[in-house]
Length: 390
View 1 (cartoon, rainbow, N blue to C red):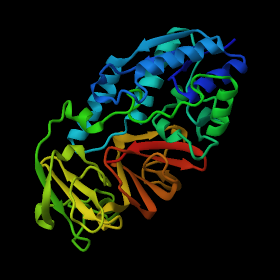
View 2 (cartoon, rainbow, N blue to C red; view 1 turned 120 degrees about the horizontal axis):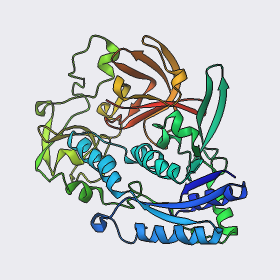
View 3 (cartoon, rainbow, N blue to C red; view 1 turned 180 degrees about the vertical axis):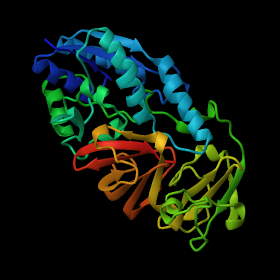
View 4 (tube, helix red, strand yellow; view 1 turned 90 degrees about the horizontal axis):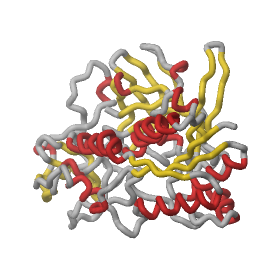
């Protein structure tokens, strides 16, 4: 009998995943990952980890499977939290959920499971794993979940072939309502539980307070850029592609000072809420941040040209292929679809591989392309690779 260790998060998705694995004849062990100790920045009535742990234990008891908890808070701080602080300090916007899957669930947790002689690890992600036999050998495919409204393949965009070979996603063929119904029929304590919000495994977090643990507030200027102001990248480029793929940059003389903020590292491209600047007929959006000079740049209305770019660039060291057998050679280009954030519809694009890295050229301009986030590219339902936007 194959042994599977499932990450029981205390939510309905992993609960039903554990049940399905048991029904399929696996020896199932539930394991709760404790990744956070500091409750000072979490909102206590929004699923704190201790409630999640208790719910996970109750589910394991109901299903009749062994249960244990594992404390990964040290690794989580080093690999996720410290990285987040460093990225925000640089004026970039990291995605902790993608990192959590790459660094914690499918690395530290996976290794712990292998020490318990597990054949696989499983999670409650809405995605699927496929297997393709080619002349070169076996390739593991990361496929979108059947529930298009809940597809979570994007969060797994940094997984490797080795990690995928040991991963199972039992609810990938189901929709969320179907998962809820199974949990209700089984009378699981998690059946009606709300989906968790916020950082992976931390719970619902007040992000400004979280960032202020290490990134101290610092007053700076807010500059408003008009619609018709010249908008361009000041990065020297030898080609149009190189120029249009870089983030727009501004100087204080490009616009007008309209207020102050508490620290440029707290803001991200496309942000609308939390600006605390009134008196304008239409909404303001962050279109640029400068953490060195501690300035944020705003544009009025969602159609401000500073919010849109047609291309992005991924430095070569940040290019990752889930399917290395399909990796583009230098000089090659190919049409795929891509998304730059979770829940975004897939957008037609062309991947262009150069020596310095990968360019993603979209058919239509994309809103709020943000350095530090992940772009993931797909061929139909299959996620082929991803990269950190430069």
